[in-house]
Amino acid sequence: MIKLAKLSATALVALAVGTSAAWSQETIKIGGIAPLSPPGGVQTGESLRDGMTIAIEEINESGGLLGKQVELVVEDTSGVPEKGVAAFERLASSEGVVAVTGSAHSAVCTAVGPVAEKYDIPFVAGECWSDAVTAAGIPEVFRITVANSLVYSVAADWVKEAGFKNIAIISENSDWGFGIIDVFTKNLQDTGANVTSFTAERTVSDFTPQLLQLKRADPQPDLIVAGFTGSNLLLMLRQAYDLGLAPSKDTAIFAAGADVLEPEFWNVMGDAGQYVIGNPAGLPGKPDTELSRSFSKAYQAQFDRPANAVAMEGYDGVMVIAEAIKAAGGTDGPALQEALRQLRWNGTRGEIYFPQDKDPAWKFQQWPDVPIFVIQYTEANQTPSDAAILWPRAEATTDEIVLKP
Image 1 (cartoon, rainbow, N blue to C red):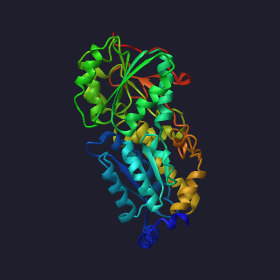
Image 2 (cartoon, helix red, strand yellow; image 1 turned 60 degrees about the vertical axis):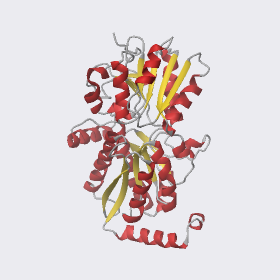
Image 3 (cartoon, rainbow, N blue to C red; image 1 turned 90 degrees about the vertical axis):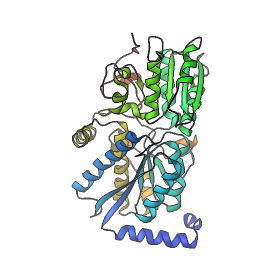
Image 4 (cartoon, rainbow, N blue to C red; image 1 turned 90 degrees about the horizontal axis):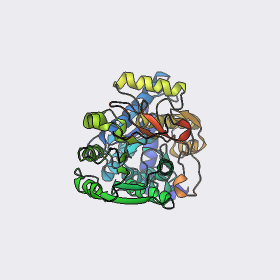
């Protein structure tokens, strides 16, 4: 009743009609949103979409849900909040989806949260790391990837363990980018390390001024954190290499964006990608379960590329919605949300559940056990699964960071 009191009479009629229409359809529709065109991280979006596709095919091959086949409807956000809102609106109103998953770019996820609330349907965020996504406390919003405060506190532990003393961060001026700076700075402030940060528009493609400033610094940074997404992350990494700054014998480079997990990383970087450090929120085969193996095999067979953390998020997002539909015995929005709150499901990256903890606020309906890794490519054309694992210590395959000779 509290939820309905927020809506106008017109909205109530539309909601009732939409709910009835959704169940009267011959299929159950699950919505997906992803950046499938610039300026968004297109390859990230495609990996999300393709992971969702594998999940839908598996569900339908096993008989569907509640006696119906399941249909995936994916909308492009271009990584732009306004387009994300319009995409979510189309899915919820015109398409009659029962829930939505996916998205990359934190600004899009925070923008669509209120739309999920408006239509009272679940949104399972796939690849948005800003604390604000779940810190907003919107009951319809759940997250199956990391929050900035979760992932970069772990990364900061690795920085401390590795002994870096002069860290430079170049981040996009987004919620996610500012979060990188904030979490690293707070976690390293009592270590004696010096942290310098720069921000730039996420559309910037020439990082030469910032990189030259770092190259001329005295002392030069021993670690650069590249906090960009999409093709511009790869441009920054390439420019740092071409300037002789990083990776080098004196300076390591840590790429915070997911684009370093894709084969296209090597198309841009070539041999210059060797020694780059990444931070995936999951690795295929860890944990080494039947589901992780079967998903990786199916993904490779269908898309002729290795699965990665983003693809696993797409798959897991659809599957937790499917599990909620089964548990609820229907597609009613509030019932699906309650089913998600009660959920415990073993996904490709571990057992997924959504605690109701609000201290701190970002923990609300945030899966707390997302596996977090720091990896380094030690050879050209490696996959993330073949790269050296530097952190966490229990999973590490080496205790040494390899610097360029």
